Image (cartoon, rainbow over all chains, first blue to last red; front, side, top):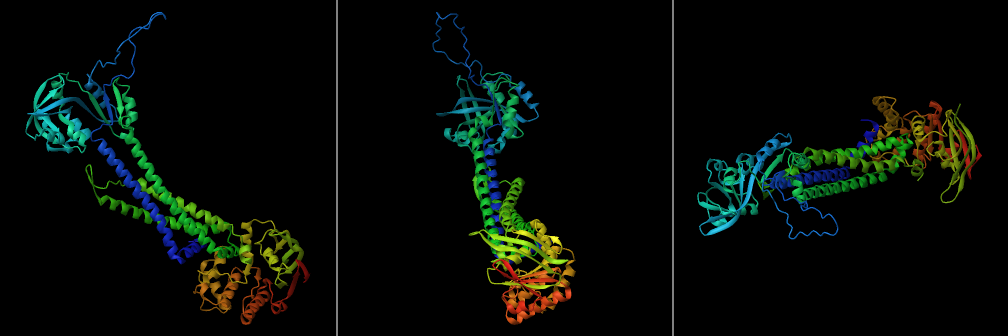
Length: 412
Length: 224
């Protein structure tokens, strides 16, 4: 420890209470930064998790073309008038006929984690006198489970049962309640074209989304193709999951080169999700930075008071031959010490707060406590922001101290 | 070689109105001389001392200390120069209150960093004993009496064996007993160690016992 640091140490330790307040203000700022960001990241994670229980990162489907080409030739001269009455944009093809070929190509792409085909149609479900409309989804059970962990949400029965019997169906709990059926009962499904088939309920689905639970019914895609008389490679939707859902947009761009069907990344279909998680991030950072800056003002204030209090001592040090740099070192050392001690205490305190949040009971999706994320990046950022702010807050008063004119002070 | 040599010093104050404090002052001080500067208040004697101390650099003229031209040196160079060459004793002792007596005495030497800490400590203790402060060295500087504090300040001024010791009314705040102690210490330093002493004082008795008196009036040297 050199002489300047020794002086800094005496200054710090001789006013313990002020030191404590300064350290606490830094710790508070840093711990709040950590707590806010860990919590917000947890909330964002849960939001995405809920979202992706039923939604894939990229969806490929047959969309009605939005560009309408005029089929009839333009009139050759201005004396002829062309009139088309009742022009309509008609969908010529439905669904995706060669889904397997596209699926194989997709699986060759390194960014893609999994692909599942679905056949979605509206149907009527009838149980004796009670009947209701439902959306029937033909799924590839293994792939579906890989993408959405569907098996986790089957509360009765088993997803793999679907593959064992072709007349098996899984109903959403809300839907089963609506028509008053239980596992083991049989129901009849009628398509819009009037084809009926009897299914046996082998399981119930509770996804957490009320709407979904009230409308959805799952069967295997093979059975669905039969029911709707489609070829064996038919699907209405190809659902694609990437390794990192944040990359969905760029992957979607690549997929567009493979197929003419509509390729939609989750961000395009759900702008509100993207913007709300972005807004939460901005809010968390803004609030926590504000807290850190307020802590910085606290340190600035304390250091400023210290400099004013010690102005005679600064003058005497200068008279004894300490130069401006020494004075800056003396006072900057103090704020760096406050910053570092406060920083470490803050990291510890922040972690304690996050752990406490982690055990607060709060039921949401598959969580029973408040969602938090332990991210080392938050800790590093909080610590560096905290120390940078203390450094700035300490430097300004130090510079003022270094400019003290000893003559003015000593002459009184 | 002269300990201090000043030529044609002029200094103005500009705030609140322009006022010439020092008018064309020139004199030399020999090595080992015990000089006191006297004059009525407002005569510019303290101003002159702070110019000599190298802390105040806003003046016209030329100051050389121990053959070194200090006029025109940078603040950092001057700080180093003061550390090595000049010791100060002020009217108000100006110790660092949170440090022990011993630390206060040692600080300038620690800053100079030419001797080991143990050597510095030994010297500091020796000089505190010389000034009759045995047993006080580990007390906080704010916990000893005014007379003792002033003697600590002298010990601090001596620690780097400066060639020049400057005092701004070093006895201004002391009773006659302590004044005599301080005076005797100064006298001894000048005689035995050959250190030059230059002190601003109001105390006529103090001044009369010095080797030489420089009297200022309205910014001019009227006798020396």
